[in-house]
Structure formats: C-alpha cells, structure tokens
Length: 195
Image 1: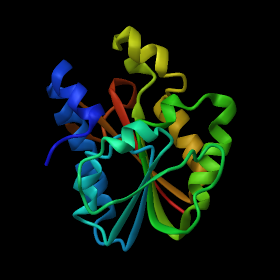
Image 2: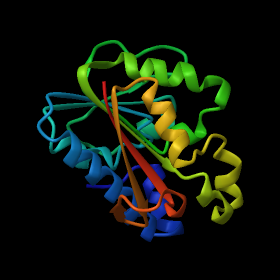
Image 3: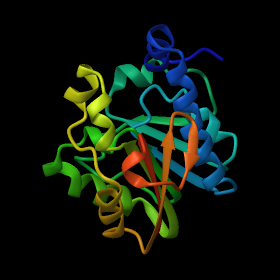
C-alpha cells in the first residue's frame, strides 16, 4: 500500500515519526476493536486509518483538507471532506477518535469542535482524543509550535473530555511507548472517554 501525501512527507523528513504515528493508531485500534461503526475526525491523508479499519466493522474518515484526502491510499474506508468545527457530522457511531487534531483548533472554536464530535457518538460510545502535551512544546520545531495553538496539560485534557464524557481514562506516550506515568513528563496524551 502506498502512503498519502502527509505521511510520505514524514517519511522523507524523519522516518521514525511514522513509528510514533502508527503506534497511536494501533492504540485506537485496540481500544475500539469490534465496534461496528467508527468515525475518525481529522484523518489527514488517512494512511494510519487503515490500522483501525482492520479492527472495526466500518470506518468513516473525515477531514477538511480535500487535497490530503485526494492523496489517500486505497483502503476500505469511507472518506469525506467535512469541517466538524462548522457542522456536526451526520449519523451516530460506536466510537469517534481524533489524533493530532485538537491542538490545531483555536480555543474559541474548541467548544464547537468537541460538541460536534460528541454529538456523533452513540450513548455508551467511546471517544478518543490524542494530542501533543503542552509540556512537549518546549522541544517542538518552529513549524509545529506555529500550528499547535491549543496543547493541554494532562489535567486540561481530562477536564475538556469530562464535559462530554461520563468517564475519562488518561494515557501518556513518549515516542511509541504507551504508559500511565507522570503526566508532565508525557510527550503525547491520549484521553479515552465513555459517553
């Protein structure tokens, strides 16, 4: 399978980033395994989405960037151009996830983003949000810092998720290693919420 434009660029610039990215998708695949209908919000070129698609009944992947979606590799994934900040996505899903998206959403649009993502979730559904930690930004590249306008601490992401989910479980990642260690030392955060 060929990769889409976004992950092809990552391969050219820093191939180890693919290991980190794919390990995040593997985590989501394990958490949502066996669910019938799953929605990915902000899928980019959807290369990593294929890891999740292999473990769920059906995966719908949306992104507002039509050019990235056009570069997507062939896979049994329903892809659609959609900006969830502007409009909720129609339908309801057993699981909804967004990896490396919330940090790009300006704080004034966060409530609309989270409300619309939550609205796509069925009762007792699972929501997963993954993002770089606020603490990691001291080590981020200038390009990342410019685009990362809404990174959060562990408590900040938990608090955001608790407004939309009944239960929230926090995980941390450093490179491709998943853990439940000390929050401020995490480079990346994954929040799993149950509606």
